[in-house]
Structures are given as C-alpha cells and as structure tokens.
Amino acid sequence: SQNTTIGSLVAGSRGAGTRLDQLNRPSGVLLNNDGDLIICDSGNRRIQLWSRNILSGETFIGYVDCRQIFFDELGDLLFTTNKNGIFQFTWQGNKNVTTFMRKAGGKFPPKSASNMSLSRTGNLYVADSGNNRILKYTLGNDDMDVVAGGQEWQSSDLAHLTGPASVIVDDKGALYISENGNNRLVRWTVGAKEGVVI
Image (cartoon, rainbow, N blue to C red; front, side, top):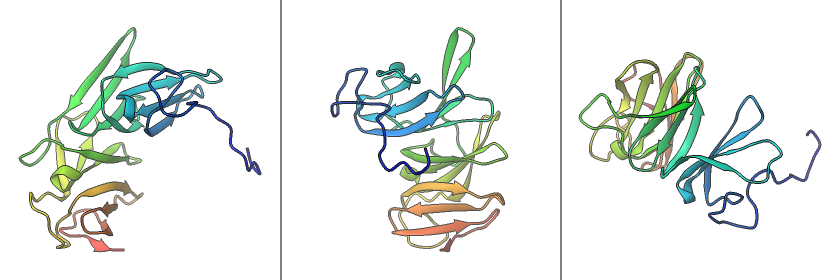
C-alpha cells in the first residue's frame, strides 16, 4: 500500500530451493485477474502459479528455461526461453496447449530470445539477442518479421544491432532497444533502416 516502507513476502521462502514453497532465480512475474502470481522460476526450469494467500506454488509448466512472461490480448501466456525462442501457452477448457512459435523472417528461428514487449495494438516485439535482431510477431499469424538489425555478425554500425537485451515499444510504434554488445540504447522508428542513439 501507499506510504509502506517495509515489503511483505508473497512468494518464496528460506532461500533458493526446489520445493514448491521455494524459488530459484525467478526472472519474470505476472499478476492475473484473480490476484494470483505467475512466476518464471528459471533456476528450477518451471513456471509456477502462486494463488493469493497461499504459501506455496503449483507448477503448471515444467522443464522450460523461462526468462520472461506476458499475457497477450486473448489471455494466453507468452514466454521466452534461454535457448529455443518463444512459446505460447493456451488454456482450452480442461486441456492446456503449449505451442512453439518458431517461424521467423530471415534465415534463422529465434535464438536466445531475451526479452519481449507487447504493443497496444497486440503486436509482440522480441529481442532475439542470439541473432542480433528485433522480431515483430502479429498475434494470429504464423510468421515473424525482422524490424531492426538482423545481421549475423557483430557491428557498431547504427544499421545493425549487437546482442539486443531488451526492447519496449511506444504508442507510435517506435522501438527502444538496449544493446549489450554496443553498450548503448537506440531508438528505431517505424520503417527506419537504422537506429538513433538516445
């Protein structure tokens, strides 16, 4: 609440561990409409649901190197992994479906998809650090488009990206990208052929 200077523990206890009441290097968290937490427990290679006021989690996706999670506009769960790219988890009645969103523009599927951002129009932008590019995925379509970077080699040229670690998108569609490899932040406007250092 406002004016509170001391936090309260809502998930995890007694240090890193593998028990259901413990976490190990959590890397992402969401709050659903019921007030429950959905947590990327990356050190344990699982995604957990922590119901409100419950002191342990429930693993509902296991054996994934989860890095970041989002809800899309349909309420499906999107998450990136360390190695294999992007997955979509869909609730379909009593059956849950996990889909590997592998297709992408260019020669390579997503590799080391480190971060993603969902625009107000429902487009998903992915920092594909392993391929030095930003991908745009329109929900409901099969393919992704390269919208920034995309070269195989590392370069400090503003027309290229090196190890993009994160991306956010503003209301006008401009992308703000942090590059680990070039130690800089750049802005790419819609349709631009190169970025601008900010």
